[in-house]
Structures are given as C-alpha cells and as structure tokens.
Length: 271
Image 1 (cartoon, rainbow, N blue to C red):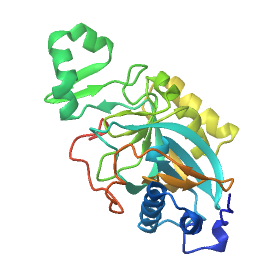
Image 2 (image 1 turned 90 degrees about the vertical axis):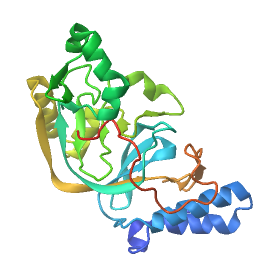
Image 3 (image 1 turned 180 degrees about the horizontal axis):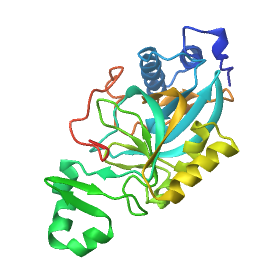
Image 4 (image 1 turned 120 degrees about the vertical axis):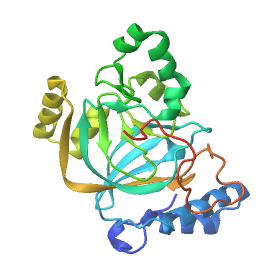
C-alpha cells in the first residue's frame, strides 16, 4: 500500500500519475507494469485540474466517480460499450441533466432492429414509443426509452452520452460491457441530483421534472468536466493499487494514449 498524494500537493500533475509512478518502481510483474505504464501515459494526455469538480468514467472499472478538491464525492456503477462497439477515450463538458429524454435512433440501429420493428409490427413499435418522422426514427420519453429517464447534456464529437437505461439488471453483472458505445449509469436520477447539488432542492427539481412527463433540461450551476478514460491500473482513494481487466485489449501491444472517434454509431449518436 502507498499513499495517494492530495491534489493540492501536485497542482500540475494528477495524483494518479504520482501514485502510479511510485508503484511502477516496485512492480515486477510484466503485465502489471504494462498496465501501469499505459495508465500513466493516458493520464498525462489528459488536461484536467486535479482540484476541479469533475466526473471520471473509468471504462475497464465499469464505474463513474465524482471528484472535487481531490476528494472522492461519490461513485456509480456503469455499463460501457461491447468489444465490437467500444467506448472511446475523450474529454468533454457536461452542462446539465435532461429528464424524460427523447431518443433519436441512430441509422445503424434503425438498420439493425428498429426499422424492421416499425415496418413489421407497427402496433408493438408504437407501444414502445417509436415514431417515424420523415426518414428519422425517434422514441418518446417513457419507461421503455433506450436512454431511460435521464441523460447528461454533454455534446462531444464521438456522440457518446452518459444516460439511464431500462435494463437495470445489467448493473448486477461483474463485467458490464453491453452498450453500443454510450455509458449507462446506475441510479441515474440520484446521479443527476448529486450533480445538481445533492441537496433537497436538487432532488425536488429532478422529481418534479420526472413527474411532469415533459422533456426537461436542468442546468448545472457550472459546467462539469468529464473524463472518459481507460485505466487498467488505478490507485484508489485508500492507497491500494487496483488492476482492471483489459476489456478492449488496448494494453497489448502498448497502446497509444487515446483512441479516436468511433468507427460506428453509438446508441447516443444524434441524440
């Protein structure tokens, strides 16, 4: 065990870089050394103030965590992309939470399933909330909506979102790589309330928006940086070095610091 330095002690270097560098000096296992080396490289490629309030999505950990002042404020289970539709690494800003979202169905998913459902079983498609407007397919807000009851407002070139899901049982799986690339968060409404301040007023706003049935955007007081990273070696808040499975095989051979835009459409594309 080793100490994870406070963010204020290393204002220009993320504490993970410091802790992982220390760990690398004493690690003999070749696979672990590769994981540590790559995780350090990925952290160094990210421009983030370690004292800021930010969200960290660690893809191989299947987890989202909220940080502020270098301290862990909360963490949530996450579902990420399948190996065939992996979640990429990127940074962006979240500016609010959208309750009762519509889903604009990406063309790839229209071809895969939704278009066939609308054409062959229009009543069932209508029951699930699907509508066709011109050449576009959308899904109304509701319990069957693929985005669930909440999504973050976080535009980014990869069209990756953080959102709810109607498939709650998948959060009980140990390996949670099931999506088309987007990130699904457990307790999505509680997650949104936390980002909105975490107090009774924030919970009231979320509850009222949900009850209204209307698509409602709740703005954050300040934009929240979002880091979607791939850290197979990670120093936890108690000073333990944790290794996560290389679910996308990005550590062999030694991976580059980041992965570019998706070669496919995530379920959040155009959403």
